[in-house]
Amino acid sequence: MGRLCTHSLVLAIPGRLDVMPLELSIEPGQRWGVLGPNGAGKTTLLHTLAGLLSPRQGRVTLNGKPLKAWRRRSLARELGILFQQPQDGYPASVMESVLIGRHPYLTFFQQESAEDIERAQQAMERLDIAHLDARLVSTLSGGERQRVAIATLLTQSPALWLVDEPTNHLDLHHRVAVMRLLSEQAEQGRAVVMCLHDLNLAARWCDHLLLLYPNGEACWGPAKDMLVTGALERLYNQRLSVGDIDGARVFMPRA
Ligand SMILES: Nc1ncnc2c1ncn2[C@@H]1O[C@H](COP(=O)(O)OP(=O)(O)OP(=O)(O)O)[C@@H](O)[C@H]1O
Image (cartoon, rainbow, N blue to C red; front, top):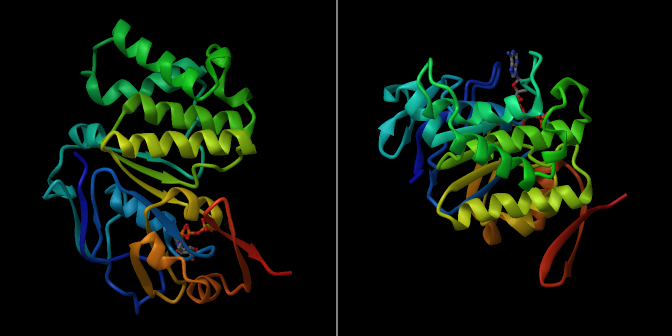
């Protein structure tokens, strides 16, 4: 179970004082998209939801318990984060990197078991990087590194996935594959919160949306209620053309 709630949460964004408190309730099985222009606070929100940043005001609870009351290792079994910036500053192979996902389940001196290795192999196959298992992560392309980071999260298998721009660097095929994977996680009862820049991915794959405006305003709710052209144009300060393709709403920026 991964039920994450925010209570009068105000993000600590430097210089932004007039910010609407967030009262979010992210339930197991839901796919939340976080939308907003550059600098709106999407990454700050994700890091605050993960307990990596303190809010200016309010609190976050996971399964009813304040994040601060969780022990870090227990929290890492419940909640996983995909960072926008790669976190691979040390030399490691793809396999070693993906196995890090099992660390919350191991004691300090414990070796990974055959089952841990099997999970990592399955995750690498799912992300189409099994053939790269012995390669140093530092030698990979941007899209390959992104798939390693997602495979690590899949190996970790948390109840709540916090993913910052999961389709960064990915080609069209892998973009869809990753959105399918996130959807499946939700179908299996996990909760997924994803920061997205692509409105059409959000419209296609998210059932709930949070719109973060750069002036501190915010609105959230079921995706069908949030995908209002005027509100999105104001969000991005960009005129949009709207159409329907195969039953899905599609947004195109007007030139
Ligand atoms: N350590 C810091 N010092 C000063 N300002 C900061 C700091 N960290 C973040 N900010 C500012 O907080 C605001 C929100 O940043 P954040 O990274 O959350 O935005 P974002 O919506 O994720 O943007 P993007 O779409 O560009 O990734 C930005 O204006 C950023 O410059």
